[in-house]
Each structure stands twice: as structure tokens, then as C-alpha cells.
Image 1 (cartoon, helix red, strand yellow):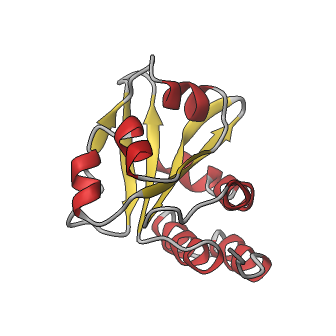
Image 2 (cartoon, rainbow, N blue to C red):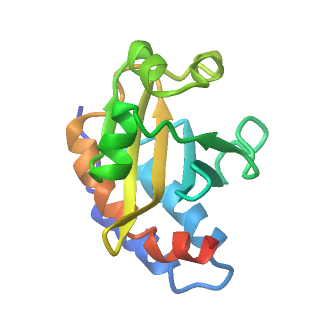
Length: 164
């Protein structure tokens, strides 16, 4: 699968960091930039709260289905948590079985017609701040998308720090 050159979209997302209305202005720009560069049908940003053992939703492209007030408990023993939050490595789920493995709300996700995901860690100063999450139809995301997506996710550091 060929993707467009991500540099113009990356440039737009980076420029949004300088605009007023943060962090919302950046989150909207990041959603648009990743839609152009990689594609998604659902886009969320979660802020990791290690003290509470939760990932709290900071942004959602579908606030009716996934409101910003929502959260997901962190299962510290799950391999997804170790990979994404502890090791800081992206996770790509390619099909419905992967979604079932990774997400406790997999039935809701399937009901929305989504069957692949890409979770991009956002880290600062050696610790996880959260994740940028993209979902789409089965087979949409690749490991190359995760490499590109990591560049976009790194831009989310100041915006996620502002969520505190």
C-alpha cells in the first residue's frame, strides 16, 4: 500500500503547535495530518495516569462514541501495556483478533466496523505521557505506518503535558 509523502502533513501538525487554543488546536491538526498521511476512521489521544492506573481520553474524533471524559483501565500485566507504555514501542493490530486481544471494548469497536489499530506511544523524559490511537478497517495499518506515525506522535508531547 502506497502512502502519500508525510512531510506536508507533518509540517502542518508542527505549525499547529504555535497557534492559540492549545491543546485542542494541535489535537485537531494532528487528527487531520494523520488522516492525510496514514488514514483512519477513528482517532483518539489518551493521557496516561500511572497513579490512577488509567488512560484518560484527551481527544476523540467521535465524541459521541468515545467521549473525552472516558477512560480505560491499564492492565499492567498485559503485553500491550508492556510494549506501548513501558517499552515505548508502537503496536499495530491488523485484524479483529488483534483488536479482541488488545482492547476490552473490542465489541464496541467491531460494531463501528473497525478491525485494525495503531497505537503510538508519546513519551517525555523517559516516561509515558499517553498514546495516539488510530483505528480503521481490517489490514489498513503497516509497520511502515508505525514508523511514520511515531514522528507525528512525538509532536504531541507539549499538548499532552498541557492536559495535566
